[in-house]
Image 1 (tube, rainbow, N blue to C red):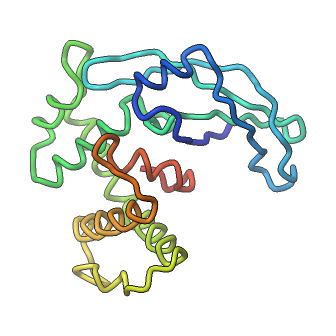
Image 2: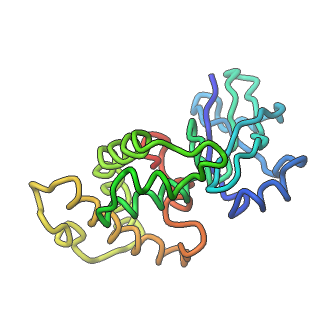
Amino acid sequence: MCKDRILPFGKTLKSYLKEHGEKRPNVSLYCPDKSCKKRILYKHGRYFRWATTKYQCILIPIYRWYCPICEKTVSLLPNFLVPWARVVTASREAAFNRRRKGISFEKISKSIVSPSIGGISATTIKRWWNRYLAQIGRTSIWVAGRLIHFGEMEDLLRFHSKGVNPTYLDTLEWFYFLLQKYAHYFQFNPSLMGYLSFLNTHLPAELRL
């Protein structure tokens, strides 16, 4: 069995390849399985996967670690990727932001991945969007919980425009309100990477966006 962790290695695909194209990140990882009692993992090779930006589709190394007790492996992803996604997170977030503004899936698809490297379909953008909306409620609650943990004193639910009967879009606007507060606590500037690349390094695997 393999698990994935997302850590902030390289703000961009280019910087990741420069630092880790041939060199494993110098980190010590513990097994996530509680029964292994924080066993330090062994280095365990690497595999390659595609990462796609607007104008490039590049094969990059993903490094793995192995637990000798439970025999599970952990793959360490750079924060511009999530498991199974081919397109980098910043590009997917750009698609979400354009859809929030009412831009059609067809127009968005033409602006996210260049046709010169294969493009991306409007159907795929729509699938991303529907999954994003379906996930946003649970992820918003997690972010609100973390803000309260950090000492946030405001009634965060009061800022949700529709209270107990929201639409997905209502919750999405609340999510971005929470994200701005969350980024402020970490003094994170989203101008280069966007919010999601940063947030995915913190979220539990089942809540990643």
